[in-house]
Amino acid sequence: MKIEVSHEDLLKNCPVQHALKFIGGKWRIGILWSMRSDCRRFGELKRDVLGISEKMLIQELRYLENLGVIYRKAYYEIPPKVEYSLTDRGRTLIPLLENIVSWGYTDMETY
Image (cartoon, rainbow, N blue to C red; front, side, top):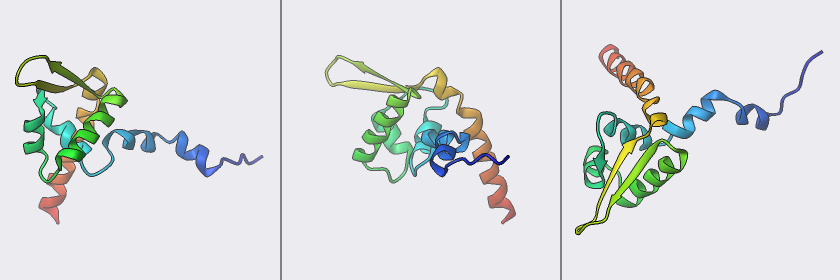
């Protein structure tokens, strides 16, 4: 007997789609890669992720924070200071990002 699975159910339970929530899009890999070894301030992230606008960086940081991948720590001082760092969940993405970087270097050298 063949079991029918709707396209919607397949996407909802697809591990690739799940992973892409975290690393998909134009900017997320760059943001996460920038934070891989240390916390970052907004200006550092803006410099590290070439071409990203302030508005988009704010939007992506909020999205990643809501997913539980990054942590935002605000210091109540003047001038205001905010640092972003990876959570334990976010750090689990680093091996995946390292593999993507490795593949990218290999592919660029080959082709």
